[in-house]
Amino acid sequence: MKQLQVAGHLVDIPGRRTFPAIITIEDGIIRKIIPADTAVPQQYILPGFIDAHVHVESSMLVPSEFARLAVPHGTVATISDPHEIANVLGVKGVEYMLDNAKQVPFKFCFGAPSCVPATIFETAGAAVNAEDVDQLLQRRDIYYLSEMMNYPGVLYNDPEVMAKIAAAKKHGKPVDGHAPGLRGEEAAKYIAAGISTDHECFTLEEALDKLQYGMHILIREGSAARNYEALSSLVQSHPQNVMFCSDDKHPDNLVEGHINELVKRSLAKGYDLYNILQAACINPVKHYNMPVGLLQINDPADFIVIDSLQLFNVLETYIDGVLVAQQGKTLIPAVPIARVNQFSCQPKTVTDFQIAANKETRVQVIEALEGQLITNCIYAVLTPENGSLVSDPTQDVLKIAVINRYYDAPVATGFIKNFGFKKGAIASTVAHDSHNIIAVGVDDASIATAVNELVRCEGGVCVTADGATQVLALPVAGLMSAEDGYSTAQRYSELDAAAKKLGSTLDAPFMTLSFMALLVIPHLKLSDKGLFNGDTFSFTEVMA
Image 1 (cartoon, helix red, strand yellow):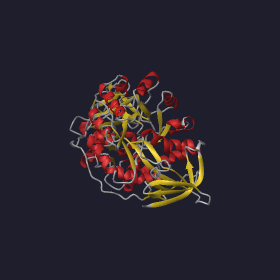
Image 2 (cartoon, one colour):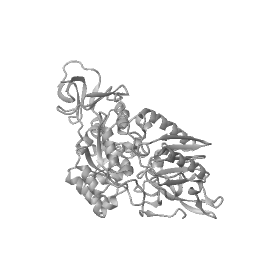
Image 3 (tube, rainbow, N blue to C red):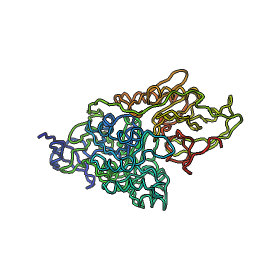
Image 4 (cartoon, helix red, strand yellow):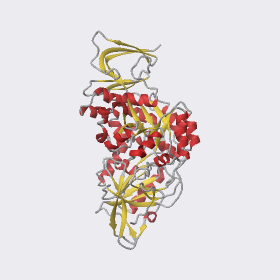
């Protein structure tokens, strides 16, 4: 029998008290919690942090490497939607994530993707139907039906959508939501269908509206979408009904911090300690029935040790009684990374990106917004060059393109504002949700160069300018690196800096770019099939 004792001041969240204690762990299970009548180390013991909604793939890391980077921050588990890889490889992609995750001591709780493809207006690499969902939900290692983005399908009782929700109910597993901007009677109907969470609220009013109908609100702070400031007061007003999540977090940001940063920010705002930890540690475990311990006798020994309740620096992280991180260093060893992919398109020429015009033309423009997934539809007047509409950096109106990566097809092009580039282009195969190639740049030649570099390496992120091209290859489904997580984070940081040197003031230009093809978020986006109006849910013309 393997026994371990840890002493310190135990933070009892349900009891809303802190007391000196000695914890005895046997074979990964907490067997005794004894209040100490002698001095204990000046450290604090509390349950580990949970990311209540994350796409691991968006970290550009496979699950095993994500775990290695997350545990130093006190994260012990995630609610993980494998929606991204499912759009590339279908159920086989989900199985890849499950298999890789099981190789490390970290509690990934994956869901069954509900919307693959996300819409019929884009080309994905695979489809996951209601029968697939039902079979996935039968598995003990699938914990929920992941975000139901097709909220019109819920409101209008689409048979396939309702069959997926019915499957989750049949297997007693919760259904995650995704309904940005939905309010009033429509929100009530969406929630009444059995959908229990939403991570897409971008105003406090929207969140309060959904809370009154019984929905749980996830406060999101990712690399691109940041809603913490708008929603953080819910930690104080509705502590039993909120959770923290990152949704999409790039590797450099994951190296810097995770859910622990939201805990620190909440403390700095003066919110109650136990309310904060209720959201960060307890609510996700109970809502999703996660196999994660909560510092109770006979629980799995999943907990963290911190230096103080003011600084909240994580000293140690334990999962199933195993010390997995200490003093900011991961103790999880790297494991071999298998490569899976689906990529089949030919290099493009400059002419593939041209938009023919012979006179000054008014065009619809996607307005990207800092810290938001929603976009605006605005207008600009462009003057053609050599019979083609081109980027106009003086107006900060740049050309954007989406290229089908699953088979050769015509390139879809449009225009976008707020990337700010003065030269060059960037491109990525992380392009929600179908993960085709997406690029933005100041001239068609640079865009073609960036795109073709990604075709060459069958996935990645790329920056090109002044005759030089830099790339981070993502050979696992065109989404994830096959390298060490820390070196991937360093390489991504270099590309992020290179993109900003082109003139961008966006905090995360690649992450922002990745959402410009996400049709289920209003208002104007671009798929591989054309410019798309998220309000009418239909294609629209570039030329206004």
